[in-house]
Length: 332
Image 1 (tube, rainbow, N blue to C red):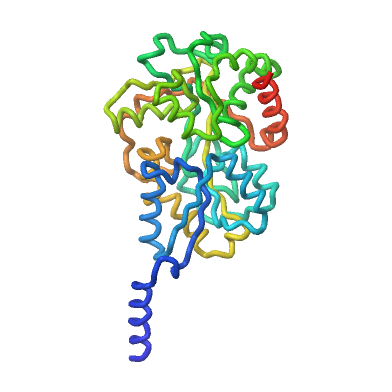
Image 2 (image 1 turned 135 degrees about the horizontal axis):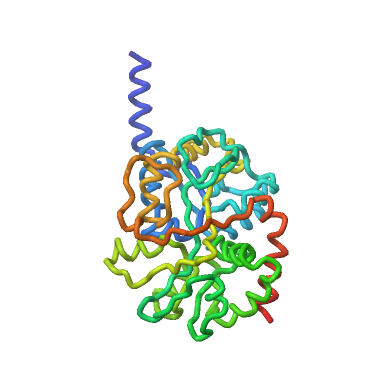
């Protein structure tokens, strides 16, 4: 009887404890993930209901800035989980020594390629694209070459590869297509760049406000406007050379490995409570199919004729040189 009474008292006490007294999981991520229209609110509600804990998001501008912050904080980081890196950053993240093996079953994942990584867990994927305003662009580029050589009066907003994963993705896309001639391509494209923003949110905001006729985003971005606004005004250009693939991932820090909620969250990430929120909040493809069908709008999105991607190791070996090449061309 005493055991039963103590159990009841413990249950009642847990129910009235303030959130600050509950077990806490701290997740670093990017700003658009935590926005009221992003996946964050749904993910937070679903995970807290499952774990009886307090899920705390800490947001920075974009994915590269996430890694920069964690590396700067080092072993003193408050992050248990870092959510929003991509496969172009995983080698650098591992080399930092700040991430621990995930230790979860990843068999439910279904991302392009043969995914195999013991540390990072994918949560979505998509393809970079130039999204354009059909009311202002009557002849969208049909290739990266047409974008580079096109009318300099038709402007594009892009992101900084030093802070943004889409910005880094564009650098890799240009390098994949132009190779040793990438610097020349950047010198031409510079004439079409309205501005370079720290992250995706700022660039897309400028685009939808009409300050730029094009923006670097994703093939799936128009689905947002179709589903939520009933508008087909914004479309993604299909490029004949192919589109660069992005797989977004989360990882557990070495500090986070001491928090039992960390592995629970990574496992939760592969299930319906997380994955079903992704398509119509992050507007990407879910990394695991849970049986819930995608909105038919996704079937109307650009389907890349070719998938472009460098290995994580190749990106880590060359990233600084390729970003420096971009910076030199853009600043001349």
